[in-house]
Amino acid sequence: KTDFINFISDQEWKSIEPVSSWFGPSSFLMSSMSALFQLSMWIRHCHGYLTENVGIPVWGSYAVFALATLFSGLILGLVSEAPEADWLV
Image 1 (cartoon, rainbow, N blue to C red):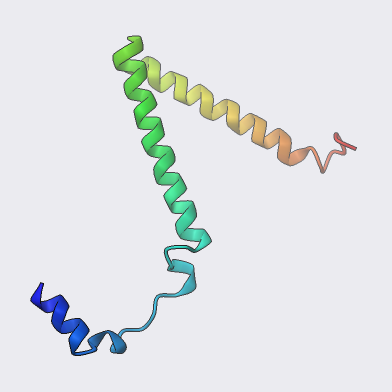
Image 2 (spheres, one colour; image 1 turned 30 degrees about the horizontal axis):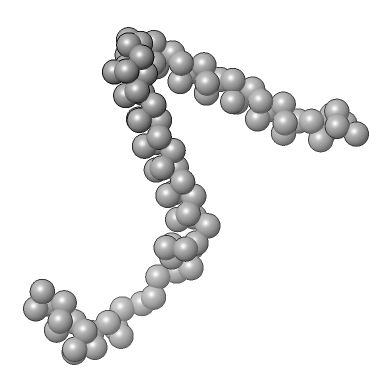
């Protein structure tokens, strides 16, 4: 506590270089990292729900997430290729 008070009162903070805008708390990069962390916590919650409340074995929960990953990759791949193949035009 005293080190922090001395850091402020002695104005030692002026000698520290500011954080780059890429690594600022409100930057796109840090917002994306936060979203990925929240997604991982949601997946963990879903895994716990599937194994504890629904009664699916752990390997079954992993299979559900593996299939969901494959399916979402398929959909994203089709969506990203649609403009090139003139599917939507």
